[in-house]
Length: 190
Image 1 (cartoon, one colour):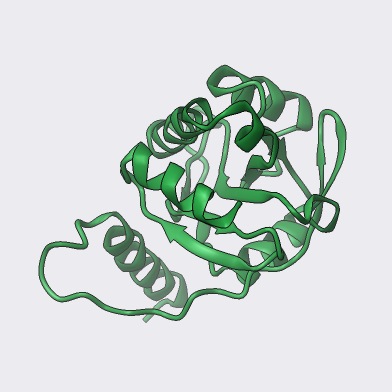
Image 2 (cartoon, rainbow, N blue to C red):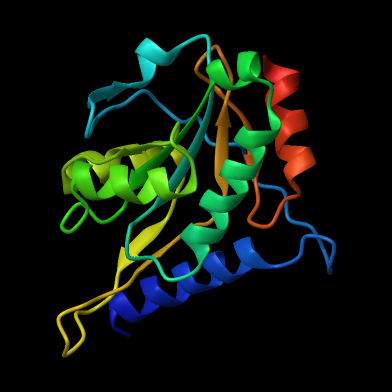
């Protein structure tokens, strides 16, 4: 059997499981990923996770041309940021890390995330840097074949990683989580 087909099937199963309702059927417990430090580029310069220690980080892996999952996740993050007090928001950063470094430039990412909230950060690295960072967070992504029109999709996991002030992964928030639960998670860590 072709290894690409097997990998696609495994990724599709993991992707669909990540989007399923956790209240349905049997729950499967997985280990919380370690996460890791990173330095990526944004339109405002380097984004160094070590320099952001002391803050709560909401890390999301996505891309500018994502048709549905990313806009939903970014809108949810914006709603949470808008619910936080100004003092809490000053200690909270939402960072979208691009899984499409081929097309996503720092300028495109800045424009994209600013549409949702001006305090959000869009960051990108090389393909190799992205792979290492995604692996440390156990975030899956896979570029699909190029369509005849030249476009392509990037399948990716949909959770948001909550990084505590100590730089460690504290929570994994699923797609569709209620704003008040995101806010409660952030407040618990501040």
